[in-house]
Amino acid sequence: DPSRLVGGGGGGRNAAAPNPAFGFDKLAVCLARGRKVYALRLLTGEVAWARLLPPPAGLGAPGEVAVTLFATRPTAVLGYAPEVAAVHSGPGGVVVQTLDGATGAVTGTHR
Image (tube, rainbow, N blue to C red; front, side):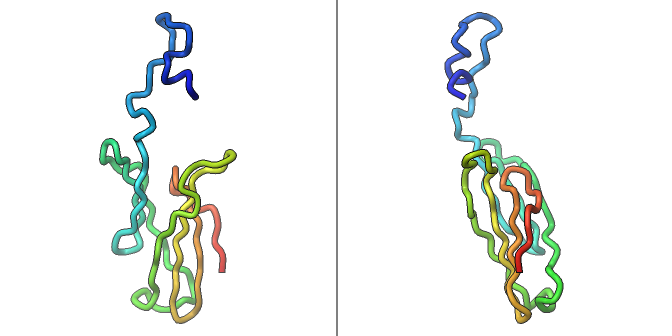
C-alpha cells in the first residue's frame, strides 16, 4: 500500500505513519535438528514462528528419513501466502508437507 510510505496523502495528524522497515522486514525460514522449522525476522532477529514437523508414518525410522526445505512461493502472489515445502524422503518413499511461510501452519501433505 503506497499510502503507508507517503503518509496517507492527507498530511495531517491522522495520516498513516511511514513503515520504518521499508519492505526489508523479511522472514528467513530454516530447518534445525530434530525437524524444527523456524522463521526468523531478518530486520530484528526475533523468531516469528516455530513448528516441529512430525515424521510422516511409513517412511522409515527417524534416523533413516531426511528432510529438505524448499521455498516454493517466496512471496505472496495473487492473494496466496508465501509457501515452504518440507520434503521427507526415506526407504518408504517421499512425503511433501507444505507450510504457510508467514504463519508456519501446515497447508497440505502429499505422498
